[in-house]
Every structure is written in structure tokens, then in C-alpha cells.
Image (cartoon, rainbow, N blue to C red; front, side, top):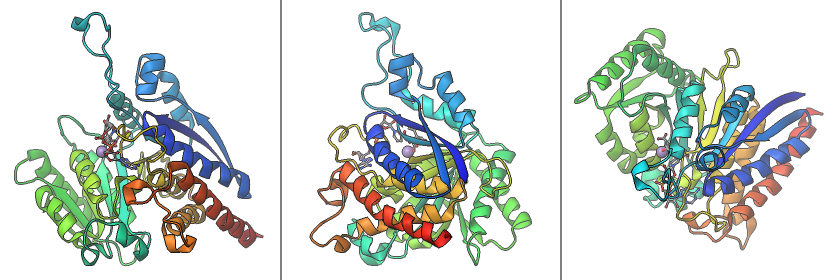
Length: 372
Ligand code: NAD
Ligand code: IPM
Ligand code: MN
């Protein structure tokens, strides 16, 4: 029996709403799938933690995170924070920011690489893209965003090397190896010139079979919407550019509510220790929180990444992804437009989660009988 401890950090605003749907999926797998036992614990992060404990990353949360095998996070932040330290005395200034909790947990767990795949689960979903069908058809890239440096953007040789090796590891899972497109601003930033030199050196000496090229970030931002398939494969970039390009990339499949992510502390090769934190790429969507309309798909797909990278349970990961794909293919449920408002539908957050659970249940029974 496969056993693992999962820590759940719902966060703020729409964070708990999307996490609730992913938890339905986790509970279903726990209940239905033979030989998988997950122990699920909840803890506070972000604004919720500031309000309860005065800090966005309480020690208890960090301890539980270190003791767990994988972490599922919703999103943190919103207009409620930072709160004044003393509402009657403005000179005391403002309290902590929820986002600091996320930056701190990533740093404390050494989650140096953030993997953000962007593709169409199936061609039937292309109609949800605001871009032209012939432009986006066939889009299939994964953004690997270095996650540690922030604010000042300095990079060390070893930080660039390890994230490049992770990109190479993922590239080599495809046959032939997926091309790596490294994105920087080497025409202006000294740190980007180092980035370009180390990426080139690492790939050409250690991974001669992987094709790679370099693009400046401004041009890459343009190609991403003009001709996204040009960047198919793996997009390797630093923290800030990866943050910006991944929100832009979400427009290709149609919504920020679709793209999942995994943040890892090692190589997901099953050999080395590799802790993973899984979260949608979007934020806490305070403008639509609390109305049961936020799209939970990105969070559910983040769970699939957890099964793939932290648990090496590829069939369960694929089953979750297939269930999502099937639910979004509305023709399967004649008469229903099974999607949330961000994709032009009218289904609620919980209806989406329930439908994924219903479809997934059948797939999991299938896996059980394959094993018998
Ligand atoms: P956001 O990603 O929360 O929202 C941007 C827009 O996309 C909004 O209009 C929102 O309604 C929409 N959107 C986002 N997720 C959606 C979903 N699942 N379904 C449907 N629509 C969705 O970004 P923002 O508004 O710039 O930031 C809000 C707060 O979230 C800020 O405090 C920010 O710092 C924080 N944030 C947190 C994370 C994180 O925890 N990882 C990531 C990004 C932003
Ligand atoms: C993300 C977010 C975070 C980041 C913020 C909220 C700290 O934008 O996860 O994409 O910059 O990493
Ligand atoms: Mn972001």
C-alpha cells in the first residue's frame, strides 16, 4: 500500500473554495483506490494565518510542511491585507503581507523550481480560447520558472545550473527530447548574461542531445500570443519572467483558472529527496471570491501533478487529468455546458468538482480492476 501525508493550505479568499474541490478528489482517491492511503492535514498560511496568529507563515505550518510528503496550496492575499498594526494609530504603519508567507515557505523548503504546463487537454477545448483556433492549436509547452530569487534578482551559478538540470530532466522524458527555450533579458541585465552563459554551458556539456535556444523576454511575450507553438517544449526562465509569462500563457487555453503548478525541491526522479508544493498559478481572485463561481480546475490539475511528481503514481495522475478533460468536453454531457463563468459557462465551483469526482470514480474503479 502506498502511504503519504498531504498538508493542505487553503489560504485566502477564493483559495479555500478551489481547495475544497480538490479535497473532494483527494478523498475520492483515498476511498476508492485500492492500495493508496493518504493522511490529510490542514494548516494556516497567508492572511488567514496573519489574522489567527499574527504571521503569514506560523512555525507550526512550516513544521507540518516539513513533515509532509506533499503540500496542496490554494492562494494567498487580497485587499484585506496588510491591515494597520493599530487602527487607531496610523503612525504605527501596516502589518505583514500574506504573500510573504508563500515566499517564505518556498524558501524554507528550498522549492527552487516551479513547473507550469500549458497545453490543451484535447482539441475540443480550443473553442474556449480567446485567440484564433489556427494560432493556438497544438500548443504544448511547460514553463519552468526558477523560484528562489526575488526582489533584487541576483542569481548564482549553482541556482541556474540546478534549474537547468531540472528542465533537462523533463525534456528527456519525451522522445525525442523536448526543445528547451531559455528566456532572459541578456541584452540589458548582467544577471541574464550569467543565466544565458550557464544554461548554454550546462546543456551543451551535460545534455548534448537536447536542442535549445534563447529568446529575450519581450519577444517571447509576443510569440506566446502570436505563435505559441513556436515555444512548444520547455520554457526555462527566471522567477519574475516566469511569473509574468505564465499568467499570459493562461490566455491560450482560455483562463487563469485552468493552469496548475508544482514547486519542487529536487529532481522528480524517485531517487533523490524531492518535496513538492502544488498550487494553481492564479491568485486568490478576491473580485469573485465567495460566490461559488471560481474555476477549481487549475487546483484539481495541481493535484494530478502531485500524484505524478511527489508520489510517482502516474496512472492516478492521468486519471485525474482525463476526468477533467471529459468534464470540459461538454458534448459528453448533452445539454450541459460544463464549465465555469470564466470559460463562458454557468456551472458553479462545486458543480465542477462534483462532476470531476463522478467521472473520476469510474476511472479509478477501472484502475482497481486492472490491478486485479
Ligand atoms: P488573481 O490571479 O487572483 O486574479 C486575476 C483575475 O483572474 C481576476 O479577475 C480573477 O477573478 C481571475 N481569476 C483568477 N483565478 C481564477 C479562477 N480560478 N477562476 C476564475 N477566474 C479567476 O490575481 P490578482 O487579482 O492580481 O491578485 C489577487 C491576490 O492574490 C493578491 O493579493 C495577489 O498577491 C495574490 N496572489 C496570490 C498567488 C498565490 O497565492 N500563489 C498568486 C497570484 C496572486
Ligand atoms: C504566483 C504569485 C506569487 C509569486 C506571489 C503572490 C508571491 O504571483 O505564485 O505566481 O510571485 O510567485
Ligand atoms: Mn503569479
